[in-house]
Image 1 (cartoon, rainbow, N blue to C red):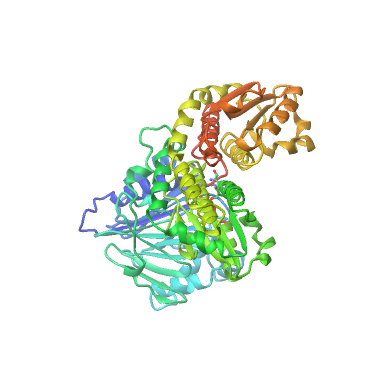
Image 2: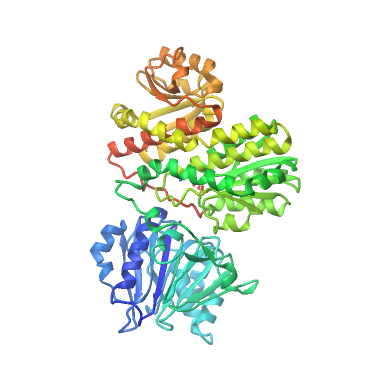
Length: 614
Ligand code: AGP
């Protein structure tokens, strides 16, 4: 995973002594969600023209203070925040990595698969290594090949062509101190354009304060940027015309800041009504979703591929498509694509769901399906992402930037896009008439209000409830029908940020094994949806009989015959709107439990926001 950033500022234009260090440090803060076990920067000192490297184990705030990142002089520099793959998180393994003489420094996101054979070759040529990382090999390889090439860029290019694996690389060198060299394969990298400075970063929010003009790089792209120029070529397709690739992004920098909230996660939970409004308005403002539904309806098979929370949104989408259209949908976990790919042919529609658009498992599932003739429909929050660019049709989520590692507003906006797709498919296939269609769309237009009401109704109790079980070792989340994917999402949210073991099952399945764990006061949450009321009442009774601490999330109309030990009342809504009434209390519960346990909900251990490694 990891986050990388680079900036080149014109020395004669607004480049005060520590400007680049400030931009890099700020950018790294916004990229910290991608990895935060160590961090580092490298700048070219504009006076001495030497490279200054500062780096260390730990989070940005601590390392930056210890090494005075903000007092590093220079106008050209790079930075990195790490999620360790090869080599433990230590001071030495932190990026940037340098060559033998300290004339080349680079940062890398990805994995160099053939680093061992390259290292062997370079050791034989006399290079000395300091770290255990795969990345350091690239610095020495460039050193080796640049020394025998006509210029640095030629050597850089030769080195890149020898790398196997995935990489987003940014390189500074004393040989050409005005430039940052870059290359991209599989890991995301975006160029930011401005008048007298240019940028590169793993993600757009890191550059939003300075520009809204971006050039997303494709696999095989390689080049360099200086304060006033950007050169990109593709190793297969030749020189890239930047004008044609440029995209404008209408996100505002404050959208990617905490805005007075203690954590991004709680801010993003509260932003859901606004995010859903923007999703809904976007979906009805053009024909994209209608066209997508028309094309999908003509295909024999409908598959959905996604990972994590997006997979749960895929299960909700499947539920609504099947319910409304009567067509079967197969939702699979992206990393399992190899077991499914043989079923894909040119009569298959594959809906890929990915907030970041950069999840490598989902990219691979998409590419494999495309190669077999499938048509790809992407639901993503980042149009310029790899998935956004490579899919045949893209439906944007319009959730705005999500910084907290735990997906919140992006889940419900994915669900809204999926539900709108289901309704449009129903119409295209002829399963619902115009009046029913209009009614359903009108119902979905209330999703922002429902989230708002659900938050207000449950926030009080969700602040108190964690005290009751924050010391528990395990929690179950059970549901039936639509409640099953919502329970899966609840368990994922709970485990990822509170580290409490949380499992979700279809409630009916609990008797077939999981109930064995139940003992006095074991917390069991029931996510009660409209379609499952009767049966779930018996499942609650079964758990009560074993002294579990049963908690039902349900609307008032369903309370009468349920006998949980605690009821959390959510707004009473149509089936189509139940995700928006049931999910916010679960998000709040996970958030406040993490806070009570003294954890940082924005940066759960071992996790990263965008998973670009397999
Ligand atoms: C959930 O809170 C996580 N952030 C994670 O499960 C995430 O949904 C998954 O990694 C997929 O990411 P994507 O939507 O960017 O593809």
